[in-house]
Image (cartoon, rainbow, N blue to C red):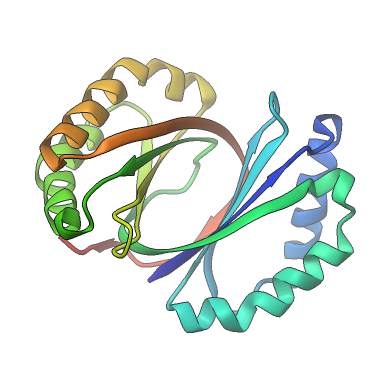
Length: 206
């Protein structure tokens, strides 16, 4: 599987709920992105940043859906959705999620591309078992770029309070994962998840 992440910024944060409702209305009308196995809207109301994460079976499926994404961009005013600043495509290395996620933490790592398999193995064998034991854990989506060694790990939580309560444990797991895989931690971001659907299959490739 592969995932597309579109990043937006400079949104009018007072209109966040309006954007969520627009997307919900679109889904309710049956107007979904063709081929999408999962979609997440990730919002940071404090900064006006937003990410749109979409999961597809393949890169070809993402390319086939691009005209629909472009049309959506034309239909939603920029002052509501924000300015699109990037679109990135990643391989989905781990996908293990449950329903009910309301918050997300995204940790971005940089490392040696030749060690990406080692990084995934550490994640599956050493980090994921401990992460699963955390209260109100709703899952993980691990995204990798084999060419650059970049990795984005998205952990999902039942609520903002649950995410905040997990910070200390998450810090330890993140530092351990980076050390074992010889990676650098580039950033850690936290988002509200006002809208999500995910029917992608469970996937652990390591």
